[in-house]
Image (tube, rainbow, N blue to C red; front, side, top):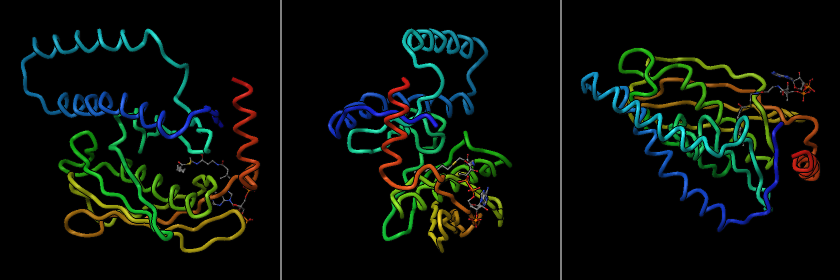
Length: 221
Ligand SMILES: CCCCCCCC(=O)SCCNC(=O)CCNC(=O)[C@H](O)C(C)(C)COP(=O)(O)OP(=O)(O)OC[C@H]1O[C@@H](n2cnc3c(N)ncnc32)[C@H](O)[C@@H]1OP(=O)(O)O
């Protein structure tokens, strides 16, 4: 598992997010524009050249592999490359889950980039968002990371592109397992339901073990 530690606090986290997030939003907008544009072939080719120049500039300094999940000195995770929530990831819609009293919720707008059946959301995207939400729900309930063991999605009916809301709740626990139920709604009601078995890996017996795993990974870097 790629854990790292960075000796930074909330002000530096905020600065880094505000520096990169506008770029992520612009790239998300770019993805949408490439899908929907009706400009001619010359304009498409011109756009490609300009984008290739920008990519080359960004790649002059880059990390190997993925972004990983660095932790701050307060043990706050920074999963900024995460496919569902990452503040650096233009593929992420992004999902912004909020957990209160054991219930996780999120509202997100899914546009052209998330299409599967015409005018409707791709089933894999719905599974991605539900997976993330049940993960955050199980993990925030115990303040310990839980990974997805089994995720069962029932697609009730097609989900219209546009705004959707998600909800997840822990329905039971047994040793290192948390059982989580959830659902997705579009403007006309429930479109998908999920049942998940989330598991806290045995190496994470408590906060001390998580700290040790982060320290070990940081020392390896
Ligand atoms: C805040 C963070 C939010 C992140 C959200 C992101 C969610 C994700 O996408 S996580 C990525 C996808 N998931 C993974 O990659 C997980 C891959 N699998 C694993 O790492 C391991 O198999 C793991 C951690 C799930 C279980 O391993 P381990 O801790 O060794 O389990 P093990 O000791 O064999 O079994 C413990 C219990 O879980 C059960 N179990 C094990 N695997 C599964 C499974 N896949 N499904 C259901 N139950 C399982 C066992 O039967 C056992 O139950 P019991 O105690 O009743 O006998």
